[in-house]
Figure 1 (cartoon, rainbow, N blue to C red):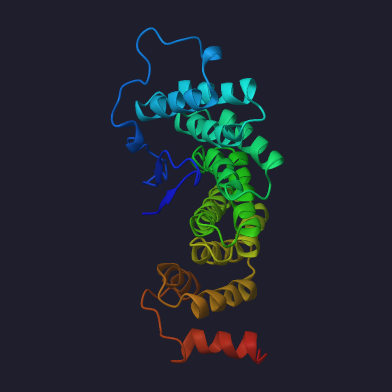
Figure 2: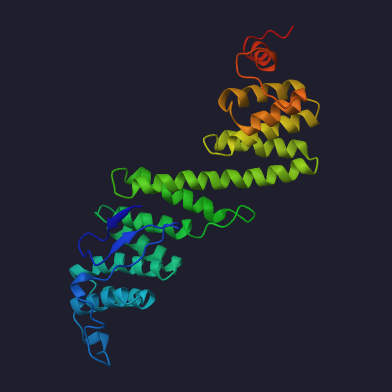
Amino acid sequence: MMEQRMPREADPLRTRFGSRHVMVLAVVAALGGCSSIFPDPPPDIETLTATEIFQTGETQLAEGNAREASRTFNEIERLYPFSQLAKRAIIMSAFASYEAGDFAGARASAQRYLELYPTDEDAAYAQYLIALSYYDKIVDVGRDQGVTRNALDELQKVVNRYPDSDYARDAQLKIDLTRDHLAGKEMTVGRYYLKRGHYTAAINRFQTVLREYETTSQSPEALHRLVEAYLALGLEREARATALVLGTNFPGSEWYSDSFAALTGEEVIEKAGEGGLFSSLYRQIVLGEWL
């Protein structure tokens, strides 16, 4: 679990990432558990100082009123645009919008922060919030993956622009998961084509996985499905070459066992270097001994 303070100057909350890596609020210690800093009814916000408005937003966050807190923080920028709290209020508004599930609002505030303060110490967090606003909306592989690609692009910006930040490592983990998700989408489409006999289209999808997402968990199956597609087209040489790649890189994989069975009709797979199919493939593909 990753835990970071954000933002550093205000430090009114702590962020923690769960199974969906969603941030949750802790009670603001400085508020002492107060339900409000003003008696009912609250005064007109335009009569408050920037500090009082900021404290109101903190209270609303602590009470779970994130959407209202976002609007409150925005008032600081409107009423006191040149105050020191205006900058802090923008990033707090972005966080509050994210916490409220208003991902578009979170992106807008975070992007504004980056445009105004690109070198500030909280710029990395602003970029990370933009990435999270897409990442948390990733849908299953059966649907359009536009959001997933947006998440990947924005997560990559965190790693590239802020490699030494507290958020780069978590962003990299999410990049790996996002790439695996995109590879899974290609596999879903490829299996669809393979099942219906559209072998060339299927081969294109599986090759995309190996070309663009070779380090993901989808690679072993992609190689096996290529073996199946090549065999269906009568391209035994290509099937055997692909099986060699599969056996070399994933010798203990169930997908190699399936490919071995498809090529030989035998369920018991040989070990690399024992002779038989594997050694024959090595001699033919690597050494060129086809005769």
